Every structure is written in structure tokens, then in C-alpha cells.
Image (cartoon, rainbow, N blue to C red; front, side, top):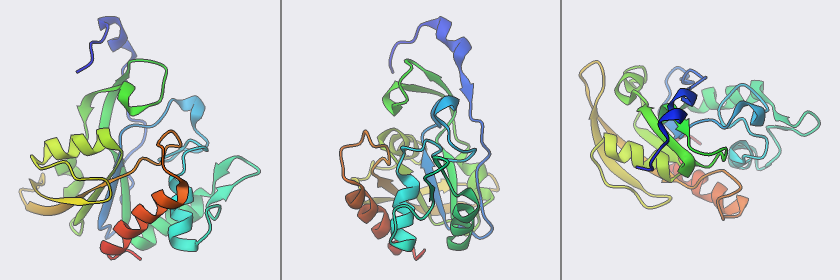
Length: 205
């Protein structure tokens, strides 16, 4: 773990969003933590306008990277985005519930996770969930550690077991996906192909 000046602990942040869990959701997608507020274009997951997650979803479900984009307002069309996620059974959370930013950079490598997602509690709210997708290396490492399972290769999954907070043993697939950040060196179309394959194998398309 990276050394942290004790004075930075006063700057810890608690996750500002509740998990988005549509009824009957079968896939839980987890990033690491939202960027700083000044980078938000909307009050939802992947809020940075230059993050490509919702362009990836536009390609997957509408063959149009700008389907969910409101270019004039430099934001995303949250109403139809939530409808799409709900229709296809996709939930959202992050692997960090409380973090310290070790620099002003939004990169995952500069985040120190002080408190992790309560995955057993979230899975208890999602009785139909069979798959968890992590959208970056740090998020993938957190889920792999929590489930005592192997870290999957990018675009692949590892089979995991975890007991939810109701005491049910859950068998899930942990998919490790490429980051949707533009800092991740992969063209948008290739990222979308990884996500499309995962969505199809989860039966959500």
C-alpha cells in the first residue's frame, strides 16, 4: 500500500451515490470511485463527460456512441440511460465506499480505499444476480480479494463464491473489463467489443 501522509486522512471521501439496483438485475457493474465533483456532468455513475462508459453502452444497445450523449449540455441523457439499464437488468456500484485521494489526479492508482463495498449486502438485494463486472484493474483486484478468487484476464471471467448477508451462498462470475477512461490506451470501438461480448454472454442483449 502506498504511504500516505496522516494529514491526508482528514480528506477522506465517502461515496456520494447509493447503488443503482433495478428490480431483477442480473449484472452488477463496479468501478472504483467517482472523480472529484468538479468533473461531474450529472449525478450518477461515470459522471465525467469525457468518460466513455455511456458511449460504450450507446454502441452496444443502439449502434450509436452518442445515443445517450447530450452534446449541447455536455452531459448524458440520464432518463433514457436509467431506462436502458433497468430494462436490461444492469445494476451499478463502486468498489470503494470511502477513499483518500493521494494526489489531485482522478486515476485509480492514486486512490487509497479505506472502506470497501459491502458486496454481501448488495448481493442480498439482488437475488437474480449471477455476474459482477469490474471496470478497471483496481476494482477487479478488490472483488478478486473479497471472493478469494483469481484475477481474470481483461475481457474474461473467474468463477467465484461468496455468501450474501442473508446467508445464501452465491455462485457468480467476475468479469474484468477494460477501463472506460480515455486514459486507458484502447480505442472506443475495441472497448465496446469487450463489453458487448460480456453483455451477450450474460444474456442481457
